Image 1: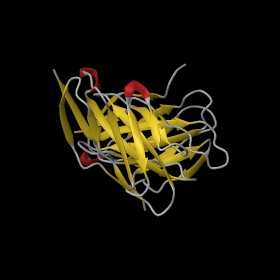
Image 2: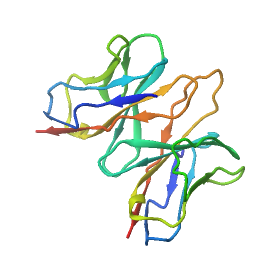
Image 3: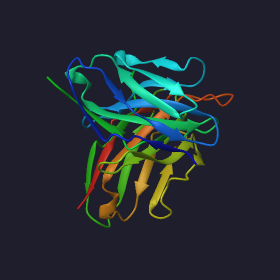
Length: 113
Length: 117
Protein backbone atom coordinates (compact mmCIF):
# COMPACT_ATOMS: atom_id res chain seq x y z
CA UNK A 1 0.00 0.00 0.00
CA UNK A 2 1.14 3.49 -0.73
CA UNK A 3 1.41 6.32 1.74
CA UNK A 4 2.44 9.95 1.61
CA UNK A 5 4.00 11.92 4.45
CA UNK A 6 4.04 15.67 4.66
CA UNK A 7 5.93 16.32 7.86
CA UNK A 8 5.23 20.04 8.07
CA UNK A 9 1.62 20.87 8.80
CA UNK A 10 2.33 24.60 8.56
CA UNK A 11 5.17 26.63 7.06
CA UNK A 12 5.32 30.36 7.81
CA UNK A 13 7.53 32.42 5.51
CA UNK A 14 8.06 36.06 4.62
CA UNK A 15 7.21 37.40 1.20
CA UNK A 16 10.01 37.05 -1.39
CA UNK A 17 11.78 34.38 0.69
CA UNK A 18 12.41 30.90 -0.71
CA UNK A 19 10.35 27.97 0.49
CA UNK A 20 10.53 24.19 0.42
CA UNK A 21 7.58 21.95 1.26
CA UNK A 22 8.58 18.40 2.01
CA UNK A 23 6.94 15.23 0.75
CA UNK A 24 8.03 11.64 1.24
CA UNK A 25 6.21 8.60 -0.06
CA UNK A 26 6.36 4.87 0.33
CA UNK A 27 5.40 2.33 -2.29
CA UNK A 28 6.55 -1.09 -3.38
CA UNK A 29 6.05 -0.26 -7.05
CA UNK A 30 6.74 2.62 -9.41
CA UNK A 31 4.58 5.66 -8.88
CA UNK A 32 3.50 8.92 -10.36
CA UNK A 33 3.80 11.98 -8.11
CA UNK A 34 1.74 15.16 -7.94
CA UNK A 35 1.49 18.45 -6.10
CA UNK A 36 -1.87 20.17 -5.80
CA UNK A 37 -2.76 23.55 -4.27
CA UNK A 38 -6.02 24.33 -2.53
CA UNK A 39 -7.08 27.91 -1.88
CA UNK A 40 -9.66 28.51 0.86
CA UNK A 41 -13.06 27.02 0.07
CA UNK A 42 -11.98 25.94 -3.37
CA UNK A 43 -11.13 22.71 -5.15
CA UNK A 44 -7.65 21.44 -5.89
CA UNK A 45 -5.54 22.78 -8.71
CA UNK A 46 -2.64 20.81 -10.16
CA UNK A 47 0.72 22.53 -9.68
CA UNK A 48 2.94 19.92 -11.30
CA UNK A 49 3.39 16.20 -11.82
CA UNK A 50 6.17 13.68 -12.28
CA UNK A 51 5.50 10.73 -14.56
CA UNK A 52 8.97 9.88 -15.93
CA UNK A 53 12.07 11.46 -17.41
CA UNK A 54 13.83 14.45 -15.89
CA UNK A 55 13.67 14.39 -12.12
CA UNK A 56 13.28 18.17 -11.94
CA UNK A 57 9.73 19.15 -12.78
CA UNK A 58 8.59 22.70 -13.37
CA UNK A 59 5.02 23.70 -12.66
CA UNK A 60 2.77 26.70 -12.65
CA UNK A 61 3.22 29.87 -10.61
CA UNK A 62 7.01 29.45 -10.43
CA UNK A 63 6.94 26.19 -8.46
CA UNK A 64 9.21 23.23 -9.12
CA UNK A 65 9.78 19.85 -7.54
CA UNK A 66 12.53 17.27 -7.64
CA UNK A 67 11.94 13.54 -7.63
CA UNK A 68 14.53 11.64 -5.60
CA UNK A 69 14.00 7.91 -5.95
CA UNK A 70 16.66 6.86 -3.44
CA UNK A 71 15.17 9.08 -0.76
CA UNK A 72 11.59 8.51 -1.92
CA UNK A 73 10.99 12.24 -1.82
CA UNK A 74 9.28 14.82 -4.01
CA UNK A 75 9.88 18.17 -2.34
CA UNK A 76 8.23 21.32 -3.70
CA UNK A 77 10.21 24.54 -3.97
CA UNK A 78 9.78 28.15 -4.96
CA UNK A 79 12.67 30.63 -4.95
CA UNK A 80 10.56 33.66 -4.03
CA UNK A 81 7.03 33.44 -2.63
CA UNK A 82 4.19 35.95 -2.89
CA UNK A 83 1.36 36.71 -0.52
CA UNK A 84 -0.96 35.06 -3.04
CA UNK A 85 0.83 31.73 -2.54
CA UNK A 86 -0.83 31.41 0.86
CA UNK A 87 -2.78 28.17 0.55
CA UNK A 88 -2.82 24.48 1.44
CA UNK A 89 -0.47 22.28 -0.57
CA UNK A 90 -1.04 18.57 -1.03
CA UNK A 91 1.39 15.96 -2.26
CA UNK A 92 -0.17 12.88 -3.87
CA UNK A 93 0.93 9.59 -5.40
CA UNK A 94 -0.64 7.02 -7.68
CA UNK A 95 0.65 3.61 -8.64
CA UNK A 96 1.28 2.94 -12.30
CA UNK A 97 -1.83 1.43 -13.83
CA UNK A 98 -4.06 2.58 -11.01
CA UNK A 99 -5.96 5.80 -11.00
CA UNK A 100 -6.72 6.63 -7.42
CA UNK A 101 -4.61 9.30 -5.79
CA UNK A 102 -3.27 8.88 -2.27
CA UNK A 103 -2.84 12.25 -0.60
CA UNK A 104 -0.69 13.51 2.22
CA UNK A 105 -2.28 15.47 5.03
CA UNK A 106 -1.27 18.80 3.51
CA UNK A 107 1.02 21.70 4.37
CA UNK A 108 -0.39 25.12 5.01
CA UNK A 109 1.89 27.78 3.55
CA UNK A 110 1.48 31.14 5.28
CA UNK A 111 3.17 34.04 3.51
CA UNK A 112 3.37 37.29 5.44
CA UNK A 113 4.62 40.73 4.35
CA UNK B 1 -14.17 25.42 -21.24
CA UNK B 2 -16.22 24.44 -18.26
CA UNK B 3 -14.36 22.60 -15.56
CA UNK B 4 -15.75 20.01 -13.18
CA UNK B 5 -19.06 21.19 -11.79
CA UNK B 6 -20.40 20.13 -8.45
CA UNK B 7 -23.70 20.96 -6.85
CA UNK B 8 -24.80 21.93 -4.44
CA UNK B 9 -21.77 23.74 -3.07
CA UNK B 10 -23.17 23.59 0.43
CA UNK B 11 -25.63 21.06 1.77
CA UNK B 12 -27.14 20.88 5.21
CA UNK B 13 -28.92 17.74 6.36
CA UNK B 14 -30.31 16.51 9.64
CA UNK B 15 -29.27 13.14 11.00
CA UNK B 16 -31.14 10.35 9.24
CA UNK B 17 -31.81 12.25 6.02
CA UNK B 18 -30.36 11.46 2.62
CA UNK B 19 -27.69 13.51 0.86
CA UNK B 20 -27.26 13.55 -2.91
CA UNK B 21 -24.15 15.14 -4.34
CA UNK B 22 -23.84 15.74 -8.06
CA UNK B 23 -20.78 15.97 -10.26
CA UNK B 24 -20.61 16.91 -13.93
CA UNK B 25 -17.16 16.06 -15.32
CA UNK B 26 -15.19 18.09 -17.81
CA UNK B 27 -16.80 17.71 -21.24
CA UNK B 28 -15.33 14.64 -22.91
CA UNK B 29 -14.03 13.06 -19.70
CA UNK B 30 -15.35 9.60 -19.06
CA UNK B 31 -13.67 8.89 -15.72
CA UNK B 32 -14.93 10.24 -12.43
CA UNK B 33 -13.48 9.99 -8.94
CA UNK B 34 -14.91 10.95 -5.57
CA UNK B 35 -12.79 11.99 -2.59
CA UNK B 36 -13.71 13.02 0.93
CA UNK B 37 -11.88 15.61 2.98
CA UNK B 38 -12.53 15.59 6.71
CA UNK B 39 -11.68 18.75 8.69
CA UNK B 40 -7.93 19.31 8.99
CA UNK B 41 -7.16 16.20 6.93
CA UNK B 42 -6.08 15.37 3.42
CA UNK B 43 -8.32 13.95 0.77
CA UNK B 44 -9.24 10.28 0.94
CA UNK B 45 -10.19 8.32 -2.16
CA UNK B 46 -13.69 6.89 -2.15
CA UNK B 47 -14.63 5.56 -5.57
CA UNK B 48 -13.61 5.55 -9.23
CA UNK B 49 -16.24 5.22 -11.94
CA UNK B 50 -16.50 5.09 -15.66
CA UNK B 51 -19.75 5.45 -17.55
CA UNK B 52 -22.17 2.91 -16.07
CA UNK B 53 -19.36 1.04 -14.27
CA UNK B 54 -17.77 1.15 -10.85
CA UNK B 55 -14.07 0.45 -11.35
CA UNK B 56 -12.71 0.80 -7.81
CA UNK B 57 -14.79 1.35 -4.69
CA UNK B 58 -12.15 0.35 -2.19
CA UNK B 59 -12.51 3.63 -0.30
CA UNK B 60 -16.28 3.60 0.05
CA UNK B 61 -17.78 2.88 3.46
CA UNK B 62 -19.55 -0.47 3.36
CA UNK B 63 -22.93 0.90 4.34
CA UNK B 64 -25.07 3.92 3.46
CA UNK B 65 -22.81 5.18 0.65
CA UNK B 66 -23.32 4.54 -3.05
CA UNK B 67 -22.18 6.11 -6.29
CA UNK B 68 -23.22 5.98 -9.90
CA UNK B 69 -22.19 7.49 -13.20
CA UNK B 70 -25.01 6.86 -15.66
CA UNK B 71 -24.75 6.92 -19.41
CA UNK B 72 -26.48 10.27 -19.43
CA UNK B 73 -26.25 12.90 -16.73
CA UNK B 74 -23.96 13.65 -13.83
CA UNK B 75 -22.31 11.30 -11.41
CA UNK B 76 -24.16 11.02 -8.11
CA UNK B 77 -22.75 10.26 -4.67
CA UNK B 78 -25.57 9.23 -2.38
CA UNK B 79 -25.37 9.04 1.38
CA UNK B 80 -28.34 7.49 3.14
CA UNK B 81 -29.26 8.12 6.78
CA UNK B 82 -26.51 10.66 7.29
CA UNK B 83 -24.71 10.91 10.62
CA UNK B 84 -22.63 13.74 12.07
CA UNK B 85 -19.43 11.95 11.10
CA UNK B 86 -20.39 12.35 7.44
CA UNK B 87 -19.83 16.10 7.70
CA UNK B 88 -16.98 16.81 5.29
CA UNK B 89 -16.08 18.29 1.95
CA UNK B 90 -16.71 15.91 -0.94
CA UNK B 91 -14.67 16.49 -4.05
CA UNK B 92 -15.23 15.10 -7.48
CA UNK B 93 -12.49 14.83 -10.09
CA UNK B 94 -12.53 13.75 -13.72
CA UNK B 95 -9.95 12.64 -16.24
CA UNK B 96 -9.98 11.78 -19.92
CA UNK B 97 -9.78 8.23 -21.28
CA UNK B 98 -6.55 6.39 -20.60
CA UNK B 99 -4.60 3.96 -22.72
CA UNK B 100 -1.53 1.94 -21.97
CA UNK B 101 -1.68 2.68 -18.27
CA UNK B 102 -0.84 6.32 -18.70
CA UNK B 103 -1.89 8.38 -15.73
CA UNK B 104 -4.05 11.29 -16.77
CA UNK B 105 -4.36 14.42 -14.74
CA UNK B 106 -7.38 14.54 -12.49
CA UNK B 107 -9.23 17.83 -12.60
CA UNK B 108 -11.03 18.67 -9.40
CA UNK B 109 -14.32 20.40 -8.83
CA UNK B 110 -14.93 23.03 -6.13
CA UNK B 111 -16.43 20.46 -3.77
CA UNK B 112 -19.67 20.07 -1.85
CA UNK B 113 -19.50 20.88 1.82
CA UNK B 114 -21.90 18.66 3.70
CA UNK B 115 -22.95 19.63 7.20
CA UNK B 116 -25.00 17.17 9.23
CA UNK B 117 -26.89 18.70 12.14
